[in-house]
Length: 158
Ligand code: FES
Ligand code: FES
Image 1 (cartoon, rainbow, N blue to C red):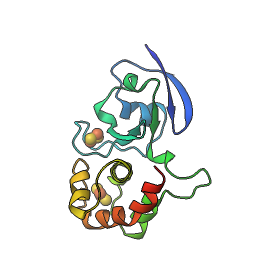
Image 2: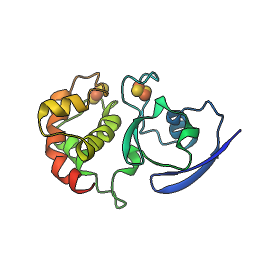
Image 3: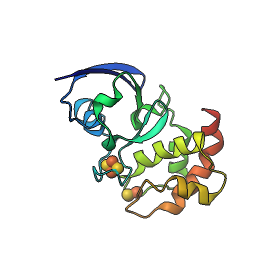
């Protein structure tokens, strides 16, 4: 069984993993970071989105071994060390950008990447940028509001 070493939320971790282990499975089951959700396992819903070297990826669409030597951030790693929420988390809270919360970790991770690395200058661009993330509660209106609200502070953190 291969052994992999990578950074997760700023800390180095090493584990033995079966070669077929998905990154999402590694994060949830080996590291017990269950904020990363799995809604489909077929790369459609975006609930499993994490950052790989600062860019959003669907963790069910890659193998854990492919993340070896790289840096992964999960939803557990976006708040400050003292527990202060990330501006995107604050905005989702303030704008009621969630209902059941299942899609929320993936939405937040995608929204941070969207704001920091893509054009989010209009609501249409935000909707387009988040099209890989599905909300089964259909709370898109308030999700878009949250992204608009958090954009300046989130961009400043890039
Ligand atoms: Fe990865 Fe749905 S669980 S995209
Ligand atoms: Fe329920 Fe999005 S808040 S799936």
